[in-house]
Length: 385
Image (tube, rainbow, N blue to C red):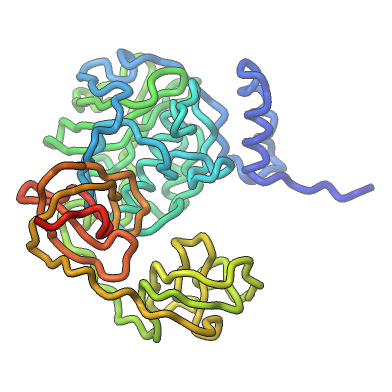
């Protein structure tokens, strides 16, 4: 008899989603057995409306779409539904970074919506990616039933508590049911917060003003508040307005922006298994100081390499002439991150200024005015005035 192979959580999720909608909960529960240790797959769902999820507060921006010209930076309050191409809210099976199941009704652009679990997991990781300027999913196990987020977060090394902080996940349990999670976008005071949320069987996105009240933070019915799940300390510092810890000097011989020829590639910055590359030429888009394979090529589309892999290079392109302080007109689209890992930044036709230049990055020009950053742009998206 052939040895039985344990299914991965990705395979379990695929099986759940293949079942008819009315059978998915039953199919999911069948996988949560003592002989399966990855019981972090969501299998409980509630379809409560906003009037129950936030009984004493106010709700707004229900399914609001992204405006033209987003605010970019380390942290900005989300007041609109994530848009097309935001991998934080797209399942891994569809090319994204989110490890949760697909939402219902399924959003046409971000398929983990509508679902509180998929949204909270995606938003938490989006905040981390924007602050650290990284890509991917930092906390893959936050894909469980909503009420169980506390245990999974603590097991992953995250801190929890009873006081609100910006970026924290709010976690509720519900007697005999799934519970609910939301993300704190703004702390108004110790007893009032502004959140972003989603709901399975409900709306893909909305903002709520929640009041602590009797300690339940606005939730009605049989919901009970469990905790706030806090961002990692380094991210919290940035979100709260502090400066990130400067990285150590990069002991490397190549620079971001160089086009290099390679004879090998690795799947991660610390991998020891050298592979034969399908593409043998790419651009260095990121450098991780001190890593075994410090150079990331083409934002990860090729992989990671080290000096031994590089067999030739073309220096980074010369500056275009734009300088910090120059007045410019935005004539093309940009991004919410200088690495190109966030939402699209618009603002076409706006007059702004060059705030900072991130040499060698895909979107090097940080553009904005006295009110803040508009976005990050390439040179051909800007016209000097």
